[in-house]
Image (cartoon, rainbow, N blue to C red; front, top):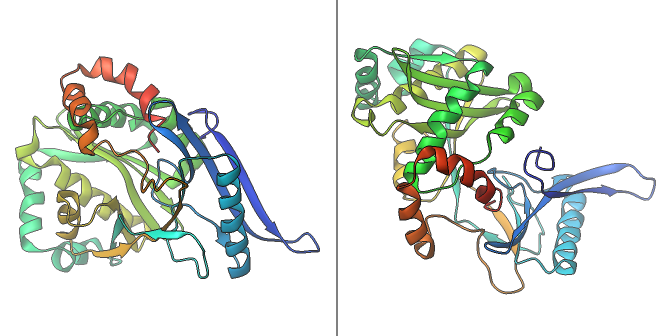
Length: 308
């Protein structure tokens, strides 16, 4: 998908023993542009990546990735590991964390005991307004319209629609598209991925116009309820920066933090991939918010593919 939908060069490393048996693997993509820099990442545009396999294979793959980064003189190698890699020689950067919530097997238990009374009150607000939650792969266009508008409002270029079309095609039932409607108007939407027994809400947005009616609260509640129905015991709110407003929003649901021990190497001391929230991008971010959505949806995908 990174090759076909976004046009990035990809690498597939496999650690084998002397008999040729595979003991580990590491997928990576090179994301580079003259404007933002040159990065070797596993995996770009996502929260997780890095090597998987036996302990010896993990160390060998990390060392191989560093050699590749050195040979290609990239600005930053970033392996977005979910768990620590024992014996890894790369520096660990804990600038991000993810937030997890354990789910019961019964939606009623989730409502009565899994969330606080204050949160239940916030969920009831959009319900009283007549909003409802819908699911299905046919909601991709609805999701993209809401998501791209939210990204414009945040001053951030949106990923191309074809990227999400590729996700829908490749992942099938392991991707969930959902939207909250007020009558026929979509006011919040999300796209998330299932991995084993965990669902992550990976991309989401909600209408600024209807923010006081809290459609995002119903969006998250609807997804949690759906996860319980499908038998997924873990709801992953996705990555965020510690102590940010997004972090506080996720913690109110009775969830717990899990640090993300990403591994990095840089020849020049680069500590992160480009961050649109950085002060150096503030002028561009403010200007982006003033553009029509139709314009940002044309220009944005050309820029976002360089922001891993």
